[in-house]
Length: 340
Image 1 (cartoon, helix red, strand yellow):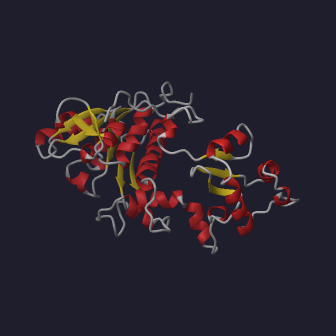
Image 2 (image 1 turned 30 degrees about the vertical axis):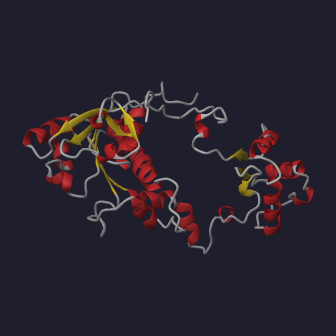
Image 3 (image 1 turned 60 degrees about the vertical axis):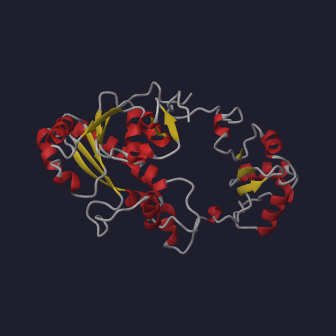
């Protein structure tokens, strides 16, 4: 089924996570889903304020019996520990947790965790294989290290925002801070296992997003952009249908495009000896008109099981329904029994 219910390669690994909001918690959510034991440590005074962001899931009676949906989804598979991190006893307890763990994740501004008594050198003196993962917006040693920021700021510095419209998802938080950090931590665990030494990982979300966007960044040095992401290529685009829904066509290669042209009775559009990947406004406009002749479901039925790189564009509600061609199967199982 493609889930991680039985695949637990990180079983036996212990992680202490002091991060908040999306980046660090998403990273440790991935690690926990892969079998790691994650202890989410929250300060007793404020805690992770994602807990207070609506919408809420109910876990009991009254205001105290609820928590934010995003907080719940990212942290349901972790052990929650609340400590007073302004108190010597709380700091001592945290230190005991950290020195016996394989990984410590923190997202304070550079230098703060060290001032609290948790420098990498101190942790390393007690556990030479420990991994300290410091997730920040701008890195530990840049001219912006001391500044606050959110996903939009990190995306903007990566050169990946072109329009005034906001991105549809927090890419920098979830990919730059979550996935990339998890990948780096797992690489550091491999090193600790085979080389016997730990690491202090400087995990900058802005830098991670530049690495994620390395291809368009490199292409920009040659004065261009991804030709098939420009929107002008007829065979690679989103099209509206008769019922005001959408479909996605990505028939870049001749072996997909030519059969597609035959089916819609446009043989004159077919590639010859060479694949035609230049923008063609006339074909683009004609395709728009063709797709408006049928509903999304009708087009989906017509192209069902045909290898043409054609898919319906689903909304978020449909991925949980019988209309989902992937049968609603998620890579990582989500918590059950939540109600808004």
